[in-house]
Length: 331
Image (tube, rainbow, N blue to C red):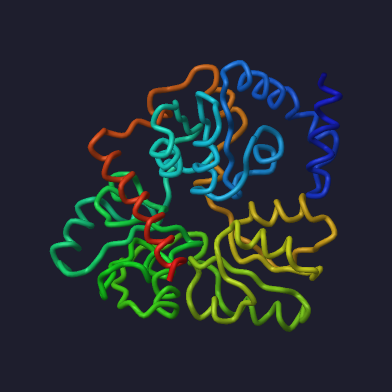
């Protein structure tokens, strides 16, 4: 069994430098986790920023936070284990209230933690005529105070469809600045940032352009606008993966968290990655041993519970996102 599992893992991980011996070390853990999830009628979700052993060893679905929650809601499994930061587990619970949802590590997020529900209420008082759009990278309690939510992929559509001329966009000020260039609305910003994406500098794009003139440079829209203006494509993690799938170029620089770079190396071995990436300390808190523990003996703090009142209001904001997105598409 260990030999077979080691070979399975190595087939997936060899393109990012894992040896068969490396795979043999984790094989007992992945075997036990995959056995337990089947016995418990559970599915495991892994955000693209998770480590390769989780992404390719135990995950049933890999992608960005909201997309994974949507997929999980369509599955018949009774239990969801979301290898992600805490707010992503909350989103999965909002879309699958009848299912048990767990996060292996109670990991935070600099962006989600930059704003609290009382901050949103204060913004509403300060800008009474403005609509409030909350990025999905927020807690359920913050979502509950918003008029609508959005993702990094649909933010322009959602904001454009808001009935108000002024729109408070929370919490990512850098994404908000990028958004302002793409919408006719007046965007009111909050001072939140992602510690991964705020560290990238436009000079790194210039350096890669000089060294690798044929490389396509992709960036997340959580990066600063002066950098985003220099790249070939800016979007969400899933949009960057799709871009690479659809283009024939052989060299890419990904200005985002290192987990996405690992995915490209593993899934597109014919394509090369140039430049550097940044690690998210929160996403990398989760280890295989944590997933095994949550399946065997889950702690109370690992189980996602959302007060009913907050859940109802937060789900309403998520539903509004769909409504506004469809409204923009219909125009």
